[in-house]
Image (cartoon, rainbow, N blue to C red; front, side, top):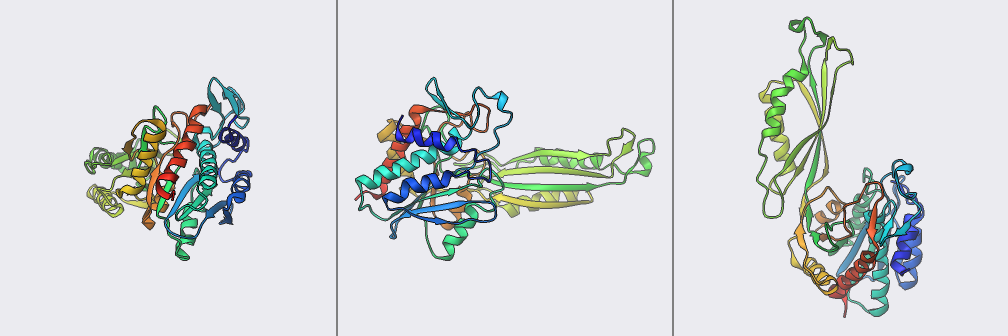
Length: 376
């Protein structure tokens, strides 16, 4: 068993369901400290964050990951217990195998090999891990970035180990992500008896034309890097549970996944205009989960593409798909951000898995990125 596979197994064995780190960061710290990495903790509320850094000069390359995982669900649905890593048929199974403990293991061993071969490398290297990526992300990387900015610590390049690959390792590198804007809408009517609709006001009926307009609206055409903005209703609820009562209030949860062709304020303005056009009585609360970001400067992209070509003998497609990632907290500081990790087909699913050969190959790709950017 290789060092990287062994470390991935040890990480999966720790049931680090958000926001519990379950000792994963202590394990990584113990591996890196003997090679000149200084450990600094940024813990907020119930969230652990660790900053492991080697060097003090610019430029700074940061590997970013998370040790937390989503709940496993019913263990009886798994072929083997989710937190007892299993190796079979060329795959490593367990919760977090793909998202993203194999990446964390690959980053760690890549860092060790690089500093052993290049002890006098250019600039600085850091590994940032959080235990609050799969949850609310309120006390994770967003807080660490605030702390780093207060002391003028600037990240030049950030490589995130999110599972970006689709069919084969390294076939996709994410160079950005769409923004995520959530809305909680309450539409008010007048409760009454269904037999006397003239004495009531049904908020479902009142909202229906506005819903039709919201779902048919073309928000933008996207651009070279992003698909068109998407509007989706995620939950809708009304009524008392009785079949003979017209409800007095309708509650709707919705989400926009939006590109750089729109701003948060553009979306809000247009939604309110549609609701007001239909004369609704409503309350609308907004929550921005993350703004869209895009890396266009070439250094990190070229270093990553070069590493994939060297190790995997292919070129990646540059992409901005998927949900949100912690990159949304790093990119606004001016850092170049890319995401490269294992195949994402099994993430958050029962029997999550990763190809064993990909774990070591990913570590070699990460090492080559380091070489391309920081080797003397």
